[in-house]
Image (tube, rainbow, N blue to C red; front, side):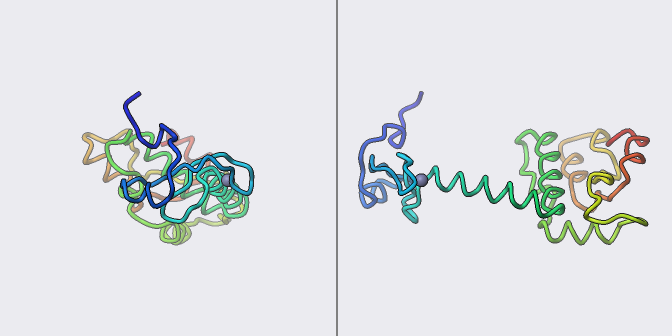
Length: 159
Ligand SMILES: [Zn+2]
């Protein structure tokens, strides 16, 4: 493992960590939830509490908001094909709210957010048609996305 000051878990005050340009510091003392974890220099928050809150927020948003699940799924799909060569959110090129409106404007009869899963987000020109990285990035763009009933998407080849 390469030398890493943060990973050494040397006890540091927040001021010492900030002085050394570190984003995290280590006090060796547990947070109020008992995590003996590093803290962020910026706001003193426990790194593990922060990770747990992020995961909890993600879980709740997935449960209550189909458009959140859709947006995460579109980003995941783009991430899988881009494989780190370009940022998924840059390639998709819009916010969750923008994508929600874009997709909703293209609903066909009977499509609602409650029925997300019965319909899917389809790439109008399939990602498999990409001839180059630049072309692939273009195809990830939200303007290439439409809602499609699952059975129609399967008939199309699931792309
Ligand atoms: Zn904590």
